[in-house]
Image 1 (cartoon, rainbow, N blue to C red):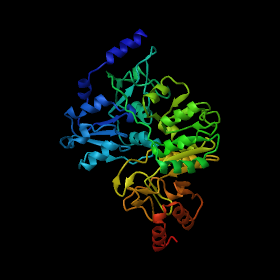
Image 2 (spheres, one colour; image 1 turned 90 degrees about the vertical axis):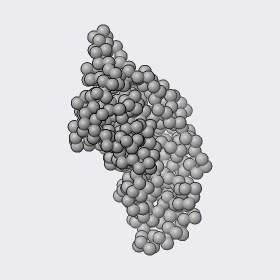
Image 3 (tube, rainbow, N blue to C red; image 1 turned 60 degrees about the horizontal axis):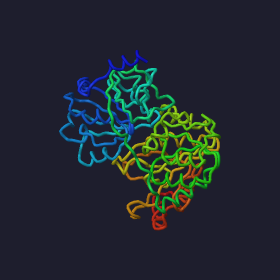
Image 4 (cartoon, one colour; image 1 turned 45 degrees about the vertical axis):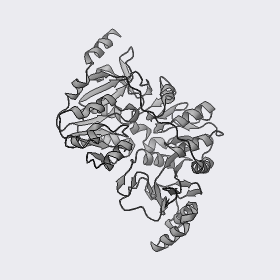
Length: 432
């Protein structure tokens, strides 16, 4: 213990020490979402370096380095998944923000293949007596990047839970330590409305006892979880561990007993919720955090029998193309793990890939089921991969169906106010 404490003390640094490491043209990668290094990012703009690329994922705050116009010549924020701060920066006309197309399980490895990583800055739980820290609540790409980076910096935060799985990092692997003390970002559970409850009711019909589930974030997945209270022996293999999964565990619904892989364990690649979530995962041997390249590999996911992936979307066209990340050419979020988990579930024995969405947007003014995706829209799940689409008006099982059959089935679950319009447009473009 004494040896590791001495080494730790030698690596203790100030924020100024870290900023002084940054040189022109560097590539910097930081931890994502709950593991975003807030102290470093809050001061990054003070660096005098130019042409610095900073790779992030789902930014939690509007940090000056990408949000303020005067730093546009110094930094770009290359993001694997946009959060509100990124969208707001683009609305303000910032040219510093750009999207990195990716499937989540390849985000880190693709980046490593494309360039050298100069600096990794992450967040870690405090060191134990054996000299190990953990990357805490996210190893989506962090462990891969840490291993490839020329310089490794960790913000050691007492509020970061120590976690199990592939999260450990020994002090000998770290170049600089900055001790910090701030609360981790939180996302509160969303209260579902009546529409979300109707969608959840339809989804609940599709999920059998003993299934292994992946849930996204938002009102629809939260509503789904509430309706699972009568299910039995569900398991979890998910990109993101959510608060609703803890609810189901405490109800006795999630037991992980019937899982094909990692029986008895929650498997995830990051956790994002409230303080209750971080307390739940802290030193919990039943929650295993593994790299995104493993957890979200469709061929790994598919090994779980009765795997069910439940994700949301912005719109679906009448042939089954799903757009979950852009509104026309205006980028909104990201592919994330949606295609990964959907494909894995569809390949699973007895599995189901479910895309859930409200039938209308903008207070009922627009149909989310559309004849064709608007020009410039990103296709998150291509029509050849689609399985189930669910709205508050029903379920459309599209796998194996022709374009004509799909159009008819999707019109049936569209909002009644738009069904005649959809039929007319479908005839115009030769689908019906």
